Amino acid sequence: MSRIRRRDTRPEQALRRALHARGWRYFVDRPVRGVSRCRPDLLFPRLGVAVFVDGCFWHFCPPHTHLPRANAAYWQAKLLANRQRDARHDDELARAGWRVVRVWEHEPLETALAAVETVLVAARVDLARRRGPAERGRADGPTPARPRRAR
Image (tube, rainbow, N blue to C red):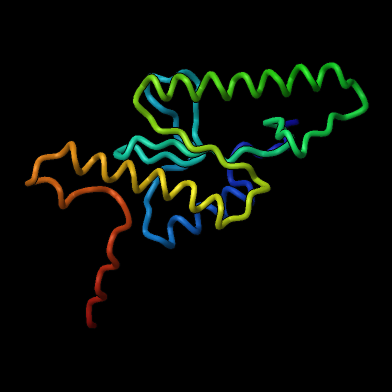
């Protein structure tokens, strides 16, 4: 199990590239203060959004679950414990005021991107409402491209 990647999986990198191309800026695999041992795959701290890209095997995806034949009881207990841990982290993040988005690795990129951007846009709108009129121009989100300097 030491060779299993915790970060930088192909589905995660594809989602990161797509979000970055659309102008969203985020932190990768960063712990959340006040939440024990929780490291979202993508973190948008100003907006209060945590994104997880869950692998089908390790997070016990219902349509794609297959238990290994060898030591099946161990794997079932292990994968159910992973699922319970995910639910516990979601609850802790929600209590701390975070919005949690979970996408499966088997979802098409467009579907995952739409799910994440829907939550990000809603969080940005809420942030703009909470801020005063003087600070509304600072809302997070896609940043406009800077014009290039002439050399």
